[in-house]
Length: 277
Image (tube, one colour):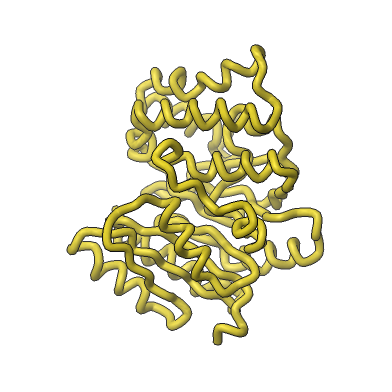
């Protein structure tokens, strides 16, 4: 079976918040129209009550390989272990609470195999919470350096990479200085070294985002993100007096209560058919 693997899906899991969301996420991989995949599910030192849940998710399909960490070392470490263990020539990202549309892998694979100038491809995403789909997250089609100023112009769990670009540039930075900013740092580093990605302009992923998502964005995380922005903007050649506001953005946004931030984003990202006429 290993010889037939084209896409390796990498997912780091630590004390999953919801059994239902974890199983839905894994099932969305199983339900892909493209069948030549493996799912590397890394248990990042979860506590005892959660390990059996992760094992049950791994048992859903023989193409799922369960990897274990003895202690919690963070998402970047988990993903790097998965990358080193991957058999596929392409690597897809997934989180344990997001859902891929059934044709996601096929569409992204078809794109990369016909567009050699791009090293990875992402997509738009439907934003979901316990009430269902509430909005659309849009990203630019061909991101450039300045597109990193406001936020990362890629939706991390929507991306399919060429394995070589991750292996050739050291994968994710596992240092504590970029915790919870791993994807932002990675994409800025890859861009600064001359690599280019693309975003298909259709939602191929459902991305879980509710009020709790904002409460997890602590003061320490915002300080780390400021530092990641500073160094990333510097490497991209976009750090100048006029862009320093964007370096400070995490702290400025952090002054807004999580509930208000969530409500504002709900209004900005709501589905087009919900917009007032």
